[in-house]
Every structure is written in C-alpha cells, then in structure tokens.
Length: 442
Ligand SMILES: [Zn+2]
Image (cartoon, rainbow, N blue to C red):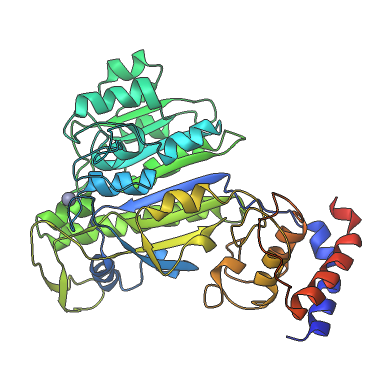
C-alpha cells in the first residue's frame, strides 16, 4: 500500500467516519461460553453427524488453549474454571481461592463486572452449584461444598440470573429469601416478563438437566436458558457479564457415550448461534467460546456421513491434557491469540480498557495507528489480529476510527527516545490532517 493510496483512502472515508459510532475497546457485554470437556475431536465428531461445522467454527478469531492445573498436568473443571474466571492457576478441586497460596478470594470475571456496576449471570446444564459455574460465582476450598457454593451465590456474589439444574445446595425458598424470582420449568421461564425482572433463579429438576438425546421433558434447553438470560441482562444500560456452560458434554465423555456427547455438543452449538444472533450488529459485545478441558481421549476412526454417528474410540473415562480450542467475536476478540493459556482470558478481557490502544501500552498514539495501517485492507487474523479492534474480521476504516476517535487517550508510555521510522512519521502527518478535518466526530 502506498502512502498516497492510504491518504486518499483516509480522505474518502471521512463521511463514513463521521457517520459511524466509535466502538469502545472495553467490551460492554461479555458472554463467556464453555463446552465442558469439549476438545477438538468432540467438535469434529459432532460436525460429522450434523453434516456441517459447528456454529462457532467460523469465528473470526481462533486459537488453542492450554489447560493444566497448578498441581496436575490434567485439570478438573474447578481448577480450569478458576483459571478462566480469575486468571490464576489453582489446585484441582479449588473454587476461586488462592490455593496454592494464602487461600485468599480471587476476583472472578463476574465480580469484576459487578464492580463496574454491570449485571451478571450464570447458565449451565449441570446443577448450578457444579464446579464451572461455581468458579465464576463462589469461593470455596472444595467444589464438593455445594451448600456453601449456593450460599456464596445467594448471599455474596448474587448474580442477577442463575439458570440451571436445581438442588445440591439451592432451594426455591432460599432463592426467594434472597430476593430472586424463581422458575422451575421451561414454561414458567419463558413466561417471565424479562423486561421487568432483575433477579431470577431457575432451578430445573433436582440435578443435572437431562441429556438432549434423552429428551428434556418440561425442562428448558440450554439455548432457551441463554436467550432468557440475555433478555434479562440486556436491560442493564451499563452492560453485563454472562457465563454459559454446556456442562454435559463432559458427562457423556466420562461415560464414553458418543451419541449423548454429540447431542450435547450440537445443543451447545445451537446456543452459541442464538447468542450470536442476539449479538449480531453490536460493536460493544465480546463473545468467547472455549472448553475447560477434553474428556475421554476421543479419537475418530471413521466418518460415517451426515446423520450417522461416527465410529470412535476413547482412551480414558477421565479428563486429558489435550489443548482445547477458543473462538471469539466482537469487541477485543482480536486479543485472542493462536496459543493461549486458560489464565490469559481474565487479562485480555479486563486490562486493555482504553479504546484504540491496540498494543496495550496504555496510550493511543502513533504505534497503534501503525498497527492498523501496516495491516490495512487485510482479513484478520491472517494479518495481525491486534489491528482489528472492532473484531469484525477486517482491518479498515472502522478500526482506524477507533484510534482517531481516541487519539492521545491514556498515559503516554515511558520509553526511550527511539526515533520513529520514517514511514511512521509520514503516517502521523497524514493522520493529524485527517483528525483536524473531522469536526463532525467531536
Ligand atoms: Zn469431567
């Protein structure tokens, strides 16, 4: 790309720039979706049966995630849930406490968003006090302390929305005493006046929800719970954090049951699609889809075609240390990298909170501009994914606007006086000229 060409592109884009909204790099809404036990092969097997990729496989940002626990190369859902929720490795079985360490409570993503005065929610197909939702909304030495986990939910972290399997510490009376509207089946959940509800506890049955392939009866599907949660949480003008877990992919993996495993993965995919439909057209929402670990050591022996269960083998009835995939869309999705650890999510969602600060140095300036211009007109993340702060998969005017609209924001980084490359200086003059000529943006 020549300088001349970039300059004319910038000039030609002024009208567009004036008309478009400047996106915030700090996602207003975060929807964090976890397929429990959903390794790469589980996704592949479900796609073979469905005859099409899972909904999330076309995400603009993708990578692989290591999952080990502090005390084991193979994690459980408590340690991996805690790592994702807090950015800290803990021992297997621990729910968001510094163990190893001083045992202090680790701030979770849910609590971080509460501190920003935003609404929060937890949705799962397991009973709701199970390890993964507990990691986001409780602090306990053991995942088995389900009574205490329920107490943490209702009396300490108080997510606005709690939808999942019932009992195991939760009860209708305790939720109502804590101020929640309660529902117990799909019909009563779907009949909620979601625009008027602020605290809802859905307790569906007395354990995990049934497997999709066994039929849900009167109980809700994961996609129905997720969309109900969104309908409640999006009343908050400040935004929200929502965790959604397809919990029973893991249980079918433990049982080495490929039919149920595929059914759960497909419903999880349907749920992701429902979330993406909700988020469609928004530039203020981050959607992350990942897994906490793989379960079963699944291998595919033969693809038997659409509508047929593939022939598979399993190496274990437990978890494995296989890396799991991550998929992301929207605001700050560009922070997803090809090779991540499960402790990286907390920082990439929370730390870089200055719109336009693409390189994360706390200041919006020439170095951020260069990230975009040097990847101009390219499809992310084939180019530099950082250059696409809008997360729309393309590096262009919208990304440039985010920088120019926030020019000079933040604190200039403390650096040595290294002369800027000549090209950067030319870009600077170009950008300043554009900046002065866009009063309509102010
Ligand atoms: Zn498991």
